[in-house]
Length: 99
Length: 166
Image (cartoon, rainbow over all chains, first blue to last red):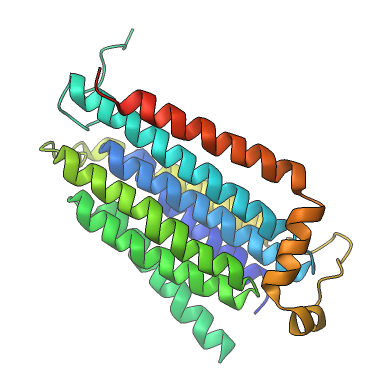
């Protein structure tokens, strides 16, 4: 397996995640798509870590996982706080601050 | 054999992520995302990152996914959330596809150009991934590790403050 295989897989998953963020309007599914994009980045880091014989990439995967966990916790708390004010998770209906 | 494993895992990851973004019900999306995480964990095993594969299953599939499922079941959202305007649909897919082609064009020339490190296959065979990983994390990356722990604490406090009843 060459490096390009893993990078291509990572690019495909990243694009699918980006499509999810752009196309879906459900806030929860949009957050899930962001997790998918972070996962694609993790594949990239692991692949370069293997082919460079270095471990820095794997260490940064752990940091990215910590950031993803923090982002999920805070983002879902924000969604719950929004849901208390207006019972919807549709991003298009949350336009109160629209100028 | 290694190639066959890679193609099976990659196929599973891509198919399940496509299903994830096209399901109407967020619970179905979360379960397809679980399959994506497991396939990516398998790819990490192929890349000599056994510890990363383990925490991929523990943290992503175990903690983050359960958090999503809790929120979906707590809110029980009635809104469909799936976009019905075809124009935005097309626009989003086209934008992602352009980015994808750009990345692929860049990938054609991608290669390892840095200086090779010391963690070769022989070192993995001798010490194992977890030991080498722990050595690297607690020697060269100690300060970022502490910063990440502070960030997790802040995120925990923030989530409690945001979601509590007032």
